[in-house]
Length: 217
Ligand code: ADP
Ligand code: ZN
Image 1 (tube, protein in one colour):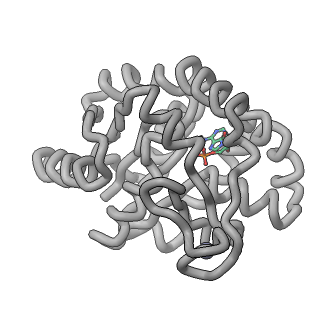
Image 2 (cartoon, helix red, strand yellow):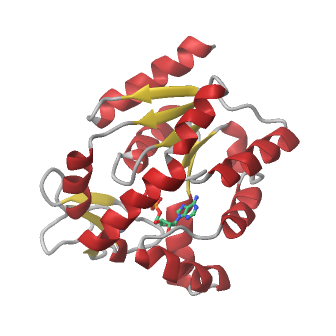
């Protein structure tokens, strides 16, 4: 499948993407994961992105488009991809449209995962992420806790609370989402690609996406 996952921070895009890759072998492309990997590795990209990310703001479109232009042409994308956290602005969506046209790729759909704000706030403040950049498994202290000692169950590395998951950074990220990213809902609706999903369980969202794609075929 070739889809975009749209939704506020904490809507569950990453979790849903992981479940869907297991289903049909499409690859998850998370710009957030790529950027955090670059920050940890101390690359020039990471050095430039870090300040924007820690404050909860967006990284400039030009940096993101450079990453995505390369990433979408890698071989593993030929079997399909799930875009998680990209596009995040109208200019990114316009650029993505041009890039996909150039590569002769058609999107199946844009899934808009619509979760109430109070659910999102609760989820984000209880989230923990594996500190190992090649793992980045996500936990929740209430519903899916890490192993004893706050260790990752998959790789044993410490799990951490992200710098952008303090209450201030979270409310900033939600404001940024409403201002910069939510306009993409109307943008993709006009293109006839939008599927809005109001399920709060990840299985419910996964099924709605599978059904949505089947209905378009
Ligand atoms: P979230 O949990 O907020 O969805 P992500 O893991 O997708 O977070 O992204 C973390 C941070 O990385 C964002 O707050 C932003 O600073 C940066 N980022 C990720 N994707 C993009 C993008 N497409 N455009 C601009 N900035 C991005
Ligand atoms: Zn891990």
